[in-house]
Image (cartoon, rainbow, N blue to C red; front, side, top):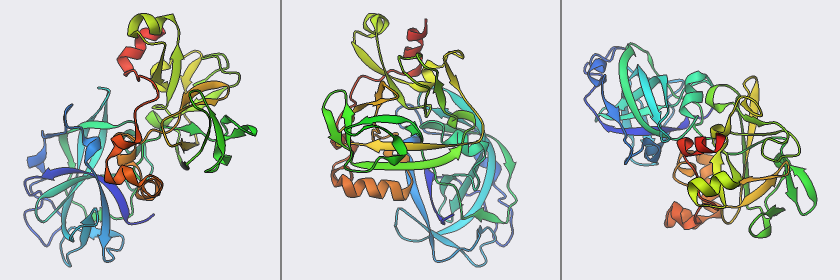
Amino acid sequence: MPTTFNAISLGALADMDTSEGNNTAENASALVGLTFGSAGDALVNDFVEISASGDPGTFYDMDNSPADQFTVDGGAPQTFDGTSVYSATITYVDGTTATISAVMFQDTDGNAYLAPEFSANADQAALEAAPIRSLTLDSLIGNTWSGLTSSRQEWDYAVCFTAGTMIITQQGERPVEELLPGDMILTMDNGFQPLRWTGQRTVPAQGKLAPIHFEPGALGNDRPLRVSPLHRMLVAGWRVQMHFGEREVLVPAMSLVNDRSVRQIEGGEVTYVHIMFDRHEIVYAEGIPSESFMPGEQGLTAMGEACRDEIYTLFPELREIGLTAYGQDARTSLRGREAQLLLH
């Protein structure tokens, strides 16, 4: 794995490693009880890119001999100081929570960061399960380490189709993983539109990264359909009109789970595929409508560097003007609790 990875900036904190020349962060317990992020200032907006300045080898050494350096978003070199692991509670933007072992590291100026895992484990699955609102450090797990592993997991939210999903194109139905930029895809609102970008990633199908499975007929689909938990499906009907005053709404797949016709399936690995147009579109997957990739604050800001740079190359206005330049959601999107009204 590369030694460039995404991390979440937590701001300048009390020094966790007060004495140099050893492998212990003596003051790590002082951070226990702190909460970072809030409903009005979600951590999903605080992603940064960490890159090795020079060659740190396998670790950023904690004994500071010699001092290892890294850069944040390509800025001036910062000197690595220490790392510790905490039992922590993460709260997602939809209000749900998960408990993880959180790896934190710090530079010599006190700037602290939440790091991704160095392997595709359950903690990484929780970090990627949904956009994160806040993080609370509940207790200290360990503060004696040789350093921070510099080769770490990519940190990305999967909001997409699974490989094998059949998409309606001008040439008929085709597997989503075979689509290429320039292919003409049937959209609900704007007819056939050219595909601008595709991306894919394989992850463990476990925890909140496991796909949501729709049995035939669950939403009017002709065949089984699997999408990522946060992928939004188009839902219509009298309940939508009655509760929300809309003819159609977008609903996260995970909010439609009923343990009968819609279930979350764990086991093995799953390949998720993004497809992106000039605007947010509703496309047809296995015969039913659902969304294309929407590079909003909770999508593009947390993607890996290579994917994000590729999108910025295609849509430079997103870098210069901001994510709102891409436009609005194709339909009103429901939150998890709102979607529960449609299940009864």
